[in-house]
Image 1: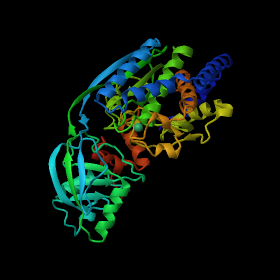
Image 2: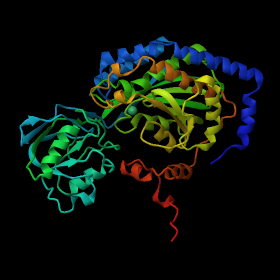
Image 3: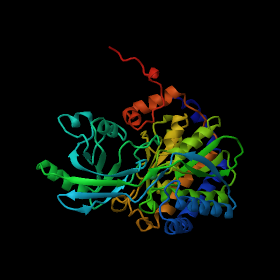
Image 4: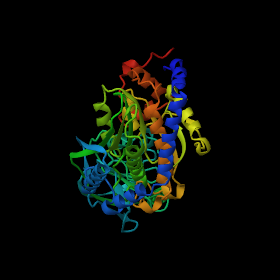
Length: 472
Ligand SMILES: [Zn+2]
């Protein structure tokens, strides 16, 4: 990849004494402003309590969008809706019952894009990790498959294997104990699932697994009322015009799952962006680069809003994209494998002085949140590592992801660190605006061994022909 030759020069420009003093004074004001702010936590509390979860396409999501847009406009921020259509999904009152050995309703949540289906009953069979070899010697035809909690088989692949072997439905055991369910998407492409797939609690799933191991009969009925339905939704885009056309994009997904309130995932990011808007408006409305804050919709169901937005910016000069997804108390900042961003991030961390990030600057690529579509368009992206205590974060994607899990100090503290980086990158003269060639981006994902998993969920846009021929 490209770099250090001119960052040395840039770093020099950046430390012109007068300019540095001014930059650091504003940075300090922003940092202190964030730490003292209670309004963003209060905003998130109202959003959670007034509208509940923000599943994309739901009335609650729309009402929360309207509220957020209105509050931004009331602050004097230039914000608008970016409308788009996507494959939507509506959760219905699904009913999954254990019929034998005990008659009782099971605690389940269908995965998104599960399609409505008439009631049927079938015996349960253990399909292990859902790999092809797990079906060897198994009579799975017409049965309901019980899928292991820690399977690494990608969504779509276990479904394909199950369908091939005649399985009629899947119960996917949760990986966290305590009656918990994990709402999640069944398909990154929005294609309706061919058989119903349900998240089931670890306790009820393991109960069935023990019975099956003893050769006992487990019988279950499934009635699926959830269904796929195309939906119109929106991102919110707030723009702070800069002195150059170069863009710095800061994004967070606005949508959540519907079982809880989406307070941690990703109400926290939603509130961090809200506070960022307030701080920029107050301290730095005009910077070297144009700063765009984007609340994305459709993330949970397949990164829809960020894909639309990243595509819309295809021909714009984007210096970098910062993604805020469940960033709790900040621990580190991550350049996702873009080595040429490291000097800026190191300088940023050093500038925090006594408030430096405990784990400093990381450099590990990962995929599966809103930075990925930007990366796939060749834009360099940055994420933060942040701590949401394990006793709270365990509830994400379930009904207990509620505002009472968010420590009121979390949004002020995290936004202080985030806003300092945003302000610096918006004003760092030497930060180049580069767009990686597809081959470079592909190499970056391969370097971090993400290829197989990305292909598994259907987000690998690189042509097979780009694969360098293997040496014999
Ligand atoms: Zn999230």
